[in-house]
Image (cartoon, rainbow, N blue to C red; front, top):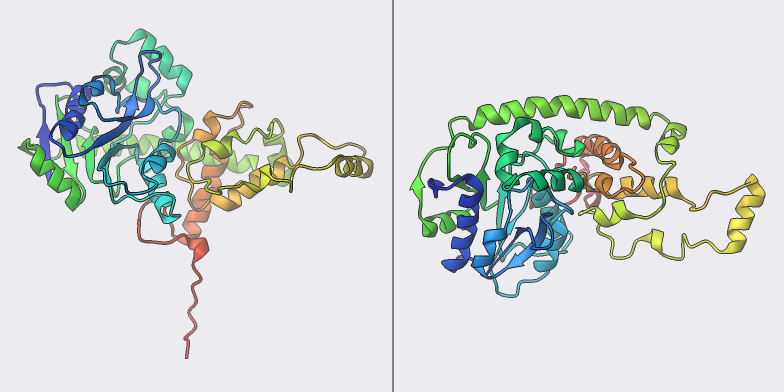
Length: 364
């Protein structure tokens, strides 16, 4: 089902009107979306029940200080009998689906809403934009140069069109018209749009051309990124040079939406080396770098989540040493996922490849 909604408003205002209607018409009990507080224009995930507060919501803002899938999983950790409309980027939707496979959340009470994603800026760049623009959302979608100012992982993302959502907000091909085109992607989404009303329509005429243009540009960026990352991992010595400035802060692990272990081995006694261990290593080698085990940390993370990495780039964004962690992980993940024929978030029913044993032998 495809409807045109609020064609007298600009697109960001039309999206806000859509979310307000979900609450006002009791189609949802709450909305989880990006919200700019009175204290900062930087949008943060916010669970909203008062529809009037949605006037300050910025679901289309080209910024995401964290992968909101982690926050959505908390809200959806169990079904409490409330319908929650969750507005996420495509990479966040895919991460949330992977988290449901790990029993970290349930999507039964969720109305999943996503948008054609033009990418996100790093926090400082977005704050600069917000300081000069009263409406940074509209400015971003109307300005191709700003769309090139998104973070490297977004410039290299090829899966920017939502999958497995209840409602898609069509932004590709939308720049020359008002309102927003809403597309249902499930029976749940179709029921929402029918109750919502709106004018039945077709997809925006320029949508596919816009998607093709974005895809071509991103394929070029992705080839450049993966080529550079592969060179940084050409051998162990080069890889260790790449991560040499790692502080073992584990920010990348905390920011990763699919780094799922409740207790990470790297914050247990296994790697809290006693003084005699450190002295023994120093005596054997002449010196020992502290913090230790930096290389093992990154290799272990690759082994743990390469099959489920959604390429959101938050690991690089939070790195205080500016290590291109996302470039490395996206490059490795591309190969691992290709090997298993597994795309995280594409098939909610397909189990993780590491949890399945396949054989062509017949059992008698």
